[in-house]
Structure formats: C-alpha cells, structure tokens
Length: 322
Image (cartoon, rainbow, N blue to C red):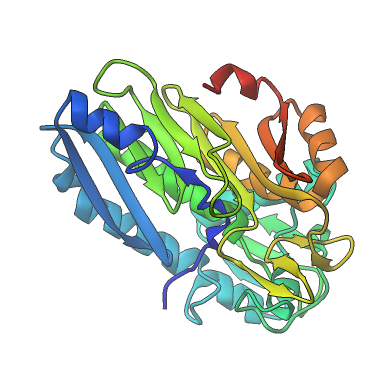
C-alpha cells in the first residue's frame, strides 16, 4: 500500500486551472509531466523543451523512498515499525529531520499541530492508526539515528508535514538536474522554480471550500515560494447536519469545529507551508489567526458567513493576492 496524505489541500489549483494553464496554452508551448504517489497525483509544468521526462525515474524513486519511510498505511514502513515498538526504533536521517520539524511546529503552535494524533484521526473514520495512546507529542524524543517514545502505545503520524517535505525534495531534485523554470504540484501543494514562461510569477487559484462558490483569491507564487491549504475538502463527511473533517483539535479530541473552512499558507518551503496550514486550521476560528499573527505567517483564512465567505489575511499574504 502507499502512503495516503489526506487531500485537505486540494483547494489549490495550479497546473490546469483558473490561470496557470490557460495562459501557458495561449502564450507559449509547455511541457507537462505527471504521476501518482502518496495516494494522490503529482505534476510538473514547464516551458517546452525543458526535458521534464528525464526526471520521472528519479522522482518515482524519491517518492518510493519517502513512502517506505513515512507511510502509516504500510506495515513494513519505518514509521509503522516505530508505532509497533515498545520504546522506539531506528530511523533514517530524513525521517529524523521531518520528525524534528514536526515537534518544533507542535511546540510553536502550542500543540495545535500534533504528530501523535493518529489514533484520534482513525477514531473519527479517517486514518489507518487504529490503536494507540492519547496524543502527546512531548513523549517523542530524538537520538542519534533513533526515535524514542516515552509510552509504549504512543504512535507517530507525519502525514501533516511529510508531503510538503516530499515536494521540497522533488523541487530540489529538478533544480539539481538543470531545470530552471517550472511549477511543481504534489496533491494540491505547489512550489515554484523560476518563473512562468512569459517571464512573470506563476499564478494559482485558491478554490472555494464548497462547489459552486466563486474563486476567493488568486495567488502570485514568486520564485522558490510554496503554498499549501488545509480545510474541509474531500476528507470529510456529513453527520447530524454538520460536516466533520479529518483535521483534529487535539485539545478537544474532536474534529475542528466552528466557521473556519480553509487556511492557505505561503512559505519559503513546502514543508513549512504544509505544517502551518494544518496547525492554523486545527487551532480554529480564533486561535488560528492569533497564532498566524504571533509567528508572522502569510495566511489566508476563509470563514463561512451568512451569505458568502469571509476572508482574513495575516503576515503580508495580501502582497501576493491578485
């Protein structure tokens, strides 16, 4: 089985939607490359003649490596071995790096982002980690080549941050192989390398949280920048008249409640954008924007209103909105 990173960030459309692809088609010929990984799709758009196809085997191998390391859906993955262990297990340098980032984000977000929340996610019908302790990220520690747990049934789930890291590594791989202008999309998370063939920034549309609503914003994606969105997307269901999503509020041990429908984060790397989008949505209506202001995060919050979506912007996100 493959790692399935929840599709909460499917709100961002880049390669075939609102602005990017139509303008490419009119102004300049382009190359496209796509494939499957992590239970979703990845794709690259670049100028004609960029030689994108030569990247395919390298990207496939990279994503397979990440899948073997951090997929909670695979019994043979390194993270599943950690979860099944009594005290911890060996870990690759890459898995340690992602775990360090996850724990740092848990601390900075005051626990809104919690990489030990897997059993809670499964309890509400969304994830594979069906057994385990209550969330407590403070009980995960990092040693030399090893991750250790302070409680035997504690589990680790890095899906809220690992897809962003996968995008960053694939972006760097393309850069190292001489590709200078492209837009890379992994499951709706995007990172720009260079500029659009017309010489401008890449542009992406933020989809509305519900079908039929107007596009709430267009983002300019400058050189090297990444963007990710968390919200009530495909990973949700209706019960007793309300929508329940897969992003948990660790404090209440329930899915996030309130009027917040999505959070889009712009950052210098996709792992940061990925993790903070999750954290800010998990923090909820009031605490999410407060966290974003405290840490000066460029974020677009969309709230359900009586007749339309209400926007709240933090950290200079307005500078890249069309």
